[in-house]
Image (cartoon, rainbow, N blue to C red; front, side, top):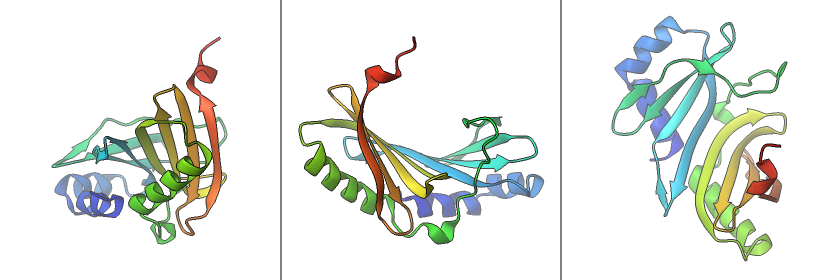
Length: 165
């Protein structure tokens, strides 16, 4: 299921309608899915409440699950930006094809085992933030503008770089 289909399913659900009626100031802040063996997992769609500085995550699969409010992962003092649906012109499928082209051209020796895809609005703009996890314990991070499809940035990073000191 694509992001817009998942979002439509969420917004049409009685669970969401009941929740949003009590959380009118919350707004869409991200969408997340993982791809493994060409299979997409469920979508997780986050709505942010600025006053509480918390996010409520909805899991969309065959049904809708509302997860408890949780702290949001962000740098202190950073604003959590709204995802503007008018600026989502490139579907995840199109972005994945573009990422595959980048991977083949720039990182051809890497074998991707899992892909994490996040639609978000950060300092670099509203984008698809893809993390391709490879069998050699590297990640290929690719950021693609959700409106234009332009590649903003891509890099190869060793997972060992993230180890705690």
